[in-house]
Amino acid sequence: MTSAARRLYKVLVTHPEVPIPALEFLRQKGCETIVCENIPPVRSDILQKLPGVDAIFWASYQPLNGEVLDAAGSQLKAVSTMSSGIDYVDVPEFKRRQMPLGHTPGVVKNGVADLAIGLMIAAGRFFHAGRQLIENSKWEKERINWLMGQEIRDSVIGFMGFGGIGQAIAKRLQCWDVKKIIYHTRTRRDNDVDFAAQHVTFDELLKESDFLVVACPLTAETKGKFNAEAFGKMKKNCVFVNVGRGGIVDQDALIEALKTGQIFSAGLDVMTPEPLPADDPLMKIPNCVVIPHMGTQTLKTTTEMAMLAANNLINALEGKPMVCPAY
Image (cartoon, rainbow, N blue to C red; front, top):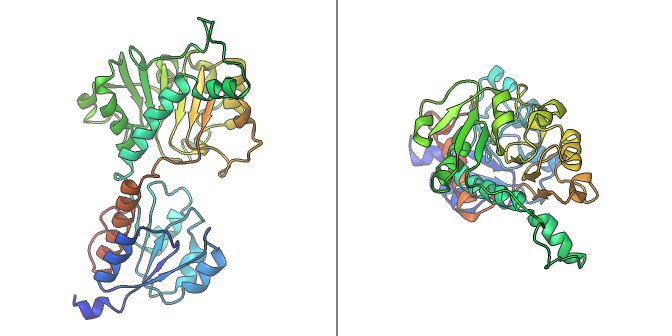
């Protein structure tokens, strides 16, 4: 394909803060980029700019569905999200239309893994509760049995999901003197021996974990998986960490488990809804650390995600397989 031919391709970029290297890469490959300028993205503006484009660089969590594909038109050749999770995408509709769809797994694992370990420590050692005590002038410096937390050392670390993110966390824990690493997935991972990890049933995961990290995607199978029954099977010293998706957890059941001491604490990067209202009950629980979906929020990871999305589109436009197809 010639450079001149490539210049005929128009790519709609749905967010103005997509890292510049990805936009420059698209332009170097001969693409004209049409960038939506609204923050947050305005759906009506996106739909208005879609007609006639050849590819879509989707950089928001708005529904990506048939409405978008219809607005673009029959000349549309490819779409890539700038995200790993695609629970907001109507994948069956993409399959029905045989529209190439890319996403950006893999490159997110390191940034999310670092943050997950941060949440394990912050929740296990009562960072939020300690901060609240300082703010309320209740720092009890003469107490010994005060804010006693859970250590990662000598603990059983459990994973719901053991893909790239789960394995990146496990890799980082290899020098933390953990007792055991266990995980639950539909099938056993061939490389679990690399992490001295053991595949277990979901019930075993719940009953054995001292730290339980959710690092799986939101699917019909995982939606609401962590409900009152699940929390009821966990250890009372269990530190629950979610870096997957909020919908995997029955949030009301989690709140009850935290308030009643059914589990020890929780660290959440994802929740329902997002953004979480300031007056949500989760924000009032001292043994719950809540942060605003920051797993990939580093310049390095975000740039890598953008470059992968751009490469997905260029490959598809040039008639090659996407680097990371979503189906």
